[in-house]
Length: 226
Image (tube, rainbow, N blue to C red; front, side):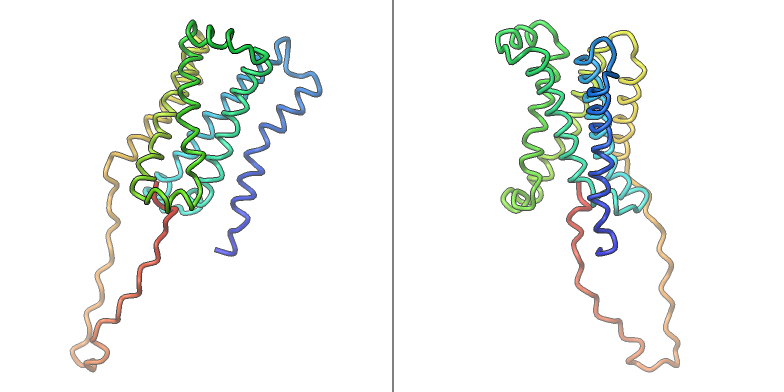
């Protein structure tokens, strides 16, 4: 475990690279004729990307036996929420100047904005309850059930993206395919790995050698659930 303490900091550093690139391009004037729209597009894209990567952690563990994606899942989920919050803040604060009447009219008029708001609201309880204290407070079964809302949030994000672009549907359909594959991997029973048969004790072996060893107590891998 000590050898992999760098995993979370490395994941956070990599996750902040798109935001750093956005800030650099903004300061350098490289966001095109409509920097607000470009900022919204990039933040929304990385929100969906973060959701997809976060949801891939459990299938990677269950199907491929990889433990490290599960160890960085919480950090990735919080980064994803951060991108979603920045996406919403850019729309409400920079694009609409916190004109709540105009925002309300936009939500009522444009269905992709309404879906985007609903998706963000789904992410809020997931971010709030991401700590160990909340796992203990809710109990793991209820906490796990609550965090399955991440799939609904991902679906809402795909619909938001699909209705937003209208014409160039390649990226939203790609995200839809990825989400569908991740859902399929969660519901399809994974193949059990065959275990090698235990060697039979020799008839000449002393009784002490034939006695089964006491089983070690299981070590829970709480982060392996999801």
